[in-house]
Each structure stands twice: as structure tokens, then as C-alpha cells.
Length: 212
Length: 48
Length: 238
Image (cartoon, rainbow over all chains, first blue to last red; front, side, top):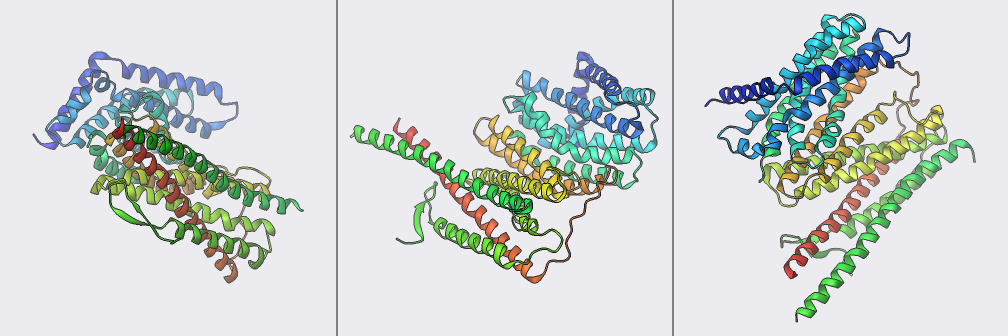
């Protein structure tokens, strides 16, 4: 089978599982709306639109973490990870498929979150949506790799946020900068982040899951 | 000493103390390793 | 007593032990650096005595970067060429990097206190950079300690170390960009171009720091290798 075919098959498997189980996505949606609500109460009056935009990005990062935590849970709980790695496919196809699945969850959650944000706080412009789209790619590619690392670790739910948050800092900088309207260079920066880290993640996934 | 001198001295002191602390940790480790080696030598002797 | 003594490497090869040489060089370089800093370098017109902190602060920062770079290089050697022991060397280098990074943050904080009266400043690129890296590499240790020893741990940590060096330039860019929308605090680091004598002092201090890294690295590595040998011996005797 071709590489693209492998990725498509694996991604389809994950999405079908989620469609049947309906565990991760509803939780993410409720979490992000609840977070936005809390942020309304957390921001003192007169904080302004700019602070609210910043809070949107915090909500997105932590919602993504929720989704990433769940990304490999099925493989972990049923010990399927080893079988997956033995499959006659390029290991990085596993990474690509997982990233696509997590991306799907995240985008689905954002389809609810962004209008909710526009409703609760101030408006939403094209730059913000573009920034969110670019940031999603970065979050999912890097987060999936880190999720695979965390699979092997003991305190998984603790380790993944620790690994993810430092790497999420540039994403937040790019995202907030673009949302607040500081110019297209922030979108370019997000694209650069995506390109570089996706490449590194793709190249190194093999080593994360193989034992030798 | 002026405040400036005090803080400058503090900065250098911090680095100095950090390195010495490191030496202390290594020394402790060395003690433990010596004890282990002694124990293993004893075991080999008992083996005959 | 010869300066260069033989010790068996842990896979049996016999290599020269350069530790006494490196340590000696470090002592000499450190002594020279401190002498130059306090007796030779001219007093800064704007900042006075406190500017001398820079002669340690900046070399500490550069050495920390060197530590992380060396750690990433060893990680690459482990993943690519499967070099024996590269994983341990990578771990020790990163450990040293975190120590030097912490010292960078401490000395930077003290300098900020003198210059501006605050213990922290978000407008100091170096400080923010090291905070991000510190967080990243502390997570490295959390990762390492939550994995059981073995080839999996070595591989995963090596990949993470490589992510680290990729993060360094990206973070640097991010911090620069973020100053546009984070409310800028108007503090400037005073200082014209370094005079010759200042530059010489700086170079000696930098060399001394790098030598210090080399020494501590060799010592820690020797300690860890010895640990591994003893464990092996214990297993053979059990």
C-alpha cells in the first residue's frame, strides 16, 4: 500500500473509533466553552479586547492538551501500540495519521469555540482564524510526537503537559500577535514553526516508537 | 561597600557556591562508590 | 605522577584520561579571568561596578547554549550512528546545561536588581529565553525519570534533545516578536562597543566557563560510567 493510503487508513480508523465512542470531542467542546466562561469572570472590567484575545489562545492550548492526552489512549489501554509499530508501513505514517485525527478533533472543537468567543467577547477577524488554523497544525504535529513519547512513560498525564507547554510558547506568541493585529509577520512565523517542527517530528517519530 | 559592590559580589559568590556545591555532591557520590567497591571486593574474596 | 593516565573505557577500549589536564586548564583560566575582571578591565562609565557581572553572566549563557548543543550532538550520534554511550553523554551535557542555565538566570536576575531595582524583567531577551529553555529541559528530566531505563528511554530522550536545539532559534524569534505587543518597559542595556581590554577580559572569561563545563562534564560522566560498571560487576557476582 502506498504511504498516503496507509495514512488515510489509520486516520480513518481513529476517526471512526471516536465517532462511535463519542468521548473525546464532546469533552473538548464543553471544556473550551467552560474555559471561555471562566475567562470572562477572570478578566477584570476594562481589560479590553486584546486581553480577551490572549485568553482565547490559552483556552485553545489547554483544550488541545485535553485532546492530545486522549490521542494514544486506545493504543495504550489495549496494548495495541506494539502491533501498530509492527505493521508493514513507514512508522511516520502512524504519526501523520494520528496528527490528522487530533487535528480533526481540534478543528471540530474550534468550530464551536470561535463563534462562542465572538459571542462572549468581541469579534473575530480573518487574521485570528488564519492564525488558529496555522497554530492547529503546529499543535497537532508536535503534540502527537510528544504524546507518543508520553505513552512509554509512567506518569503520562503529568508528563505530556510538561513536554507540550514549552514548545507551545512560540505558537501562543505567533497566535496572539496575529490575533491582536500586529501584522502578517506573526502568521509567517507560525508557518515557519509548522514547517520546521513538522519536519523534525516526521523524521524522528520512528525513533520514538521503536525499541532498538 | 556600596549596594552596587554588594550585588556584584553576590553574583560572583552565587557562581562560586554553585560550583562548590557541585564538588560536594560529587564527593558524596565518590564515598558511596568507594563503599560499593569495598563491598564487592569482599564478595569476591568470600567466593575464594 | 603522570598527568595523562590510562583508564579502560566501559566497553573495553583504553583511552587517555584527560581530566587532570582539563581541570588544570580550568583553574588557570578561571584565575586569569577573575584577575582580569577585577584588576584589568576598565570600569564602565554608565553602570559602574555592576557591569562586571556581565563577564560571568554572558559566558554562563553562551556556555549553557554550548551544553545544549553538545547534548543534541550526542543525541544525534546516538540516533544516527548508534554510538555506544552517546545517550549518557547527552544526558550529562543537558544536565550541565540546566545548571549553567540556572546560574545564568540567577546572575541575570541580580544584575536586573542592580540596574532597575526589579528581580525580573520580561524585556531582557536573554532572561526570557533561558526561562523557556529551563522549562523545556526540566521537562527533559521529568521525561527521563518517568521512563524505565533501556533503549526506548535513550531514543525518546535523544529525540527530545534534538527538539531542544530546534526550539532555541524559534524561541529567540518568538521572544523578539512578542515585544511588539507586550507592553514594552523602557529599559536599555547601556553600553557602547566593548573596548579592547573589555573584549580580552570577556574572551578569557568565556574560555574559563567553557573549560569549567568541560571539567564538570568529564567528572560527572566518569562518575556515571563508574556507577554503570559497578552495577554490571554486582550483577556478575550475584
